[in-house]
Length: 153
Image: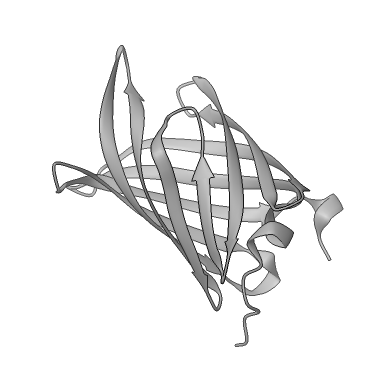
């Protein structure tokens, strides 16, 4: 099986749908969600508009602004990201690390993400992110990205 190298800007240009879940550290699935993503590139910046729909009916939005630093390195910002997300693409994977203000019911907590994305055949991108607080694992987010039919090769 051959997988192409991940070109982050090309991959996320256009529309994608993602399916995901959050599994706590004991293995219990706590939330499922879908995300519709629209990506556009302007110069050295990728803009991702994300619309989340959770299994309990809650919705959320996030806008990522991702800038290329050259040499396959990237920096990203969003309203709920603390500081900047730093990432590096290597072959068919992206490793991203960042801190986030995560909304939990009526409060917000600071958590750290160690996020890996892997490009698979047929333009499927698999994402696995460990979520930690004070270095302790809270759980893992799993997401599978697919191009929408209009963006498929």
